[in-house]
Image 1 (tube, rainbow, N blue to C red):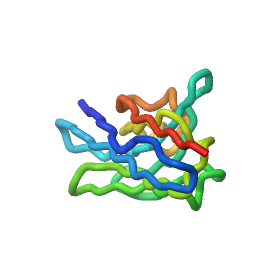
Image 2 (image 1 turned 30 degrees about the vertical axis):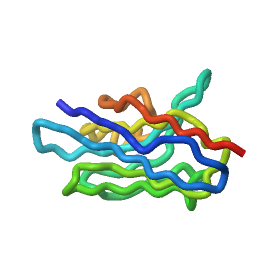
Image 3 (image 1 turned 135 degrees about the vertical axis):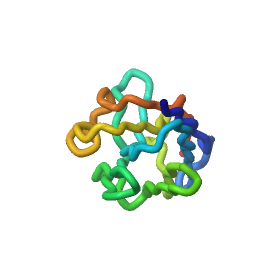
Image 4 (image 1 turned 60 degrees about the horizontal axis):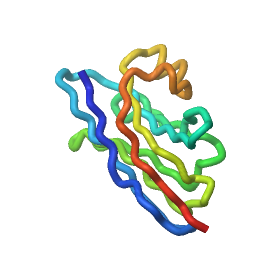
Length: 128
C-alpha cells in the first residue's frame, strides 16, 4: 500500500518559483517510478516529469524542460518538483503519481490512466 501526500502549491506572480513536495508513505520496500502530472478543469491530466524507479532516468515534457526540475530524496521518501519562471499557463492542480509495474515505468510513463497510486493534488495559481 502506498500513500502520496503533496504540498507546496500556492499563488505566485509570473516569473516566480514554487517547489512542490510529495511524501511517499509505503508499507513495503519496492522501487516505484514516480511522476508529476497537472490538470486544469475541462482538460485531461497531462504529464510534467517522470523519474524511473530508485531515482533513475528522468524525463520531461519538452515544453517544460529547463523551467521544471524533478528530483527524488530516497532518505526522506519525498519527490520534488522545482518550478521556476512560472507562467500563467502553468496554473493547474498538480498531482504526484507512483507505480511499480515495469509496463508503466518503462512503457506508459506519460499515461495518467496507467498509474495506480495518486496524491490528492496541490493547486498552483500563477497570475500575470
